[in-house]
Image (cartoon, rainbow over all chains, first blue to last red; front, side, top):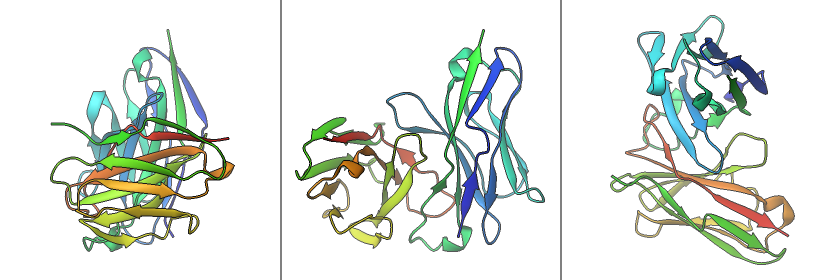
Length: 118
Length: 115
């Protein structure tokens, strides 16, 4: 079964500093990986995804993530954090062997709260 | 264009009441997903439709939960005889065709509180 772990409940960083939000995964084959952000009382907003190809994926709002197959990780990064980046971040994985146009649910981690302070 | 919309945004129900939650997916999106997000947790899969066909309902927690999408667009998640443990945010998502590499786009959710 596929699973995702986000080992940090909260990450604190000062504005202007780089940030990293960690994610590790477990799937039977090569994974499809996603990052979403959730602001209070709002749904999940898509940030970026890794499907295949270049291990460094660039997404919305200056975020990027690096796929590392040997470490089964997909950490989210941003070179310079903003106070407005403060939110709840979710990593998710999808089983690529279900790519038949049928069931393709996402399995989410428990989320990491990012707090960016001045 | 418009994103995924859900209604109501908030619902308070007394234990034992039936509730119905609505999802309007992005126009033209074939696939529709329902997730349940308990407080402090990540979303968990409930069920999946491709057009009007419910292809996976393995995540529905009990037979009190029922979902439908009769015309392949709008979907309704119904919870019968609500219990306090049903309190959660219910998220709907849609994607263009449902292939694994596609992005799922989420609605704002319906926050259900069962008293």
